[in-house]
Length: 208
Image (tube, rainbow, N blue to C red; front, side, top):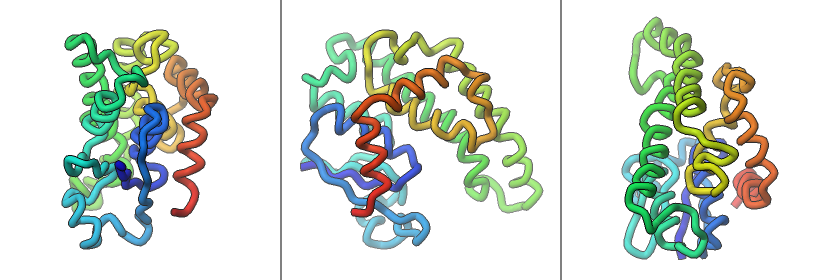
């Protein structure tokens, strides 16, 4: 059985949704970030990065959302969560998720966790100030150049969809007007209607 380590309101939601989509056999362990549980020795012994999501599987630990999402899709091929039979299309799925991880998520973090990049108060203030613009620019690139609709890759749902949805939930918190990216706004609304998404959100907000 796999075990997903997560914290509410983090990108671990995408992996949680994908596990439900896949019909996977898994359990969860919630970390309380308000108590800094991700920095304690018990969790660092599992994931030295001190980050979520972390997925413990039979072969060992996986971290980083794109890797976890790809693993879920590949180990549950009947769920049809990625075009596994087409190397190019599967690479495009990974390309999309890599962009979200390396650019969009980092832009978001500049506003919420500026201390990762700066100690000077003025420098951190500048990162906070700039964050909404950079986040919007990242979403606009997705909307205009990478999103087919109604799902990321058109009519077929993939592991890209819960990942994009997770970040789209933070638009308002990042001071970005969802109406600036109407396709992503509508995708977020559509995703919220999915039972598996509702189940994952509800589960993450409950205590283990």
